[in-house]
Length: 299
Image (cartoon, rainbow, N blue to C red; front, top):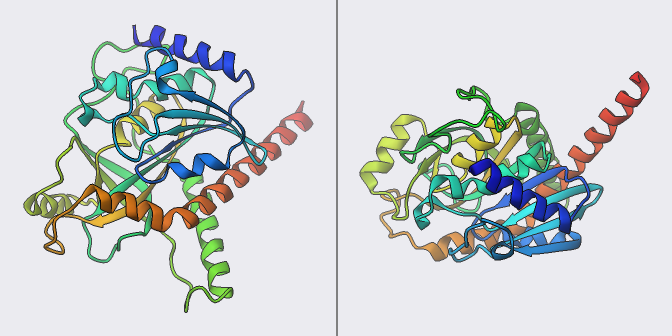
């Protein structure tokens, strides 16, 4: 049934936007403003798309925005679905299934996350190099449909190495430019790599839990992204993950955590975050054109 549901949703979207889509983006809490940069957008509220759930979390607009950013066509989830909202995990990852059936090969996943390290400050960006799934569920549980992917997909490289290289290079270029313009006293690392630990939520973690996650090798904790990343890799898609560090996790500062912090952190980093996404998409467009030209010459 999941394949049929995803196929119906994909056909609906194709009717509204028949052109090929290059990249899918999922925007996390407080980061939805990036969708406003789409040129001539086709905006589809989730409640119009067959089988799509409703996004209920503050900071998630609940709509799909499709169009062009530069020369790259994008489908942007302006708000995602979370397991803690009470949805079945198959509903949480339904958009990723749909993106796969639309022929999208690259997905950029973003989120707001809490740092478990005192050295990783609020408002920083983290490039996800790997993840730990402690949600207690996998989106691949149950009968496997080979039309999506294999029964036992490899997860050695969930987050594409080439995409990570592009993100790091573009972040370094932004940092250098900010320094030359006098916005920073020294060249600051804009994007640090880390391990994202996914939890089911919706409650924030206890200090003891945070100490345990740190011992397990986590850099930051959150309540999303991992089911989508697993599903995308199951379908053979390339995945890039970026976290906005919205707060220091429980027990680090002794202060209580509030969702408003997440929104404020998103606002604080929004400008540089959007600039980074624009540069990444531009690079992806350039590499795509180079591949097309190479293929044409070989043919």
